Image 1 (cartoon, helix red, strand yellow):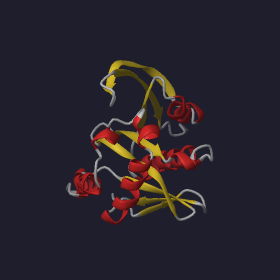
Image 2 (image 1 turned 60 degrees about the horizontal axis):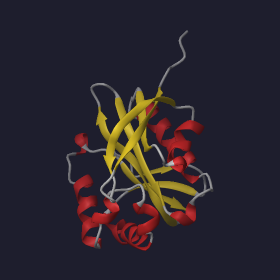
Image 3 (image 1 turned 90 degrees about the vertical axis):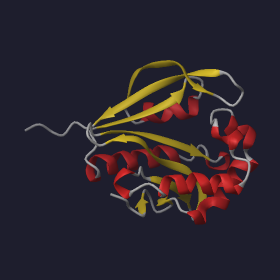
Length: 183
């Protein structure tokens, strides 16, 4: 099920990513390379708006029944970041949420609210049972989100991701299970 837009709050809207977002996405990455590149390996490979267009086309070029939903985060009408599902396994009713937020939009609760709303969408609209989030061990801002939302820390993948500096980092795995009320 592909939706075009999810309202989080009157100020925050998740909008399905499209080619029209390529310039905003690229410009954010390009002007914040040091900040974003610390934890996001794709930053170094994103050298032009064409790379961003390729990323968006790769998402939207899949058949709809195989496509993970990826959204831009709009805050008061401005591009603030990206959030979406990845690696969705429909037969086992599980998915992962990935996200990043532009530096000027940090510390406003935008990402926590966006993740919370995406979890609700996954459970209520997509029939997902398990949502996970993976964060680099040293990325306190990112891992505080699943902690705030009541996710369980399941463990650590040793050397789970190769960063832009050529060094591996451990990845912490958090999960949230949809437990419907049992009558």
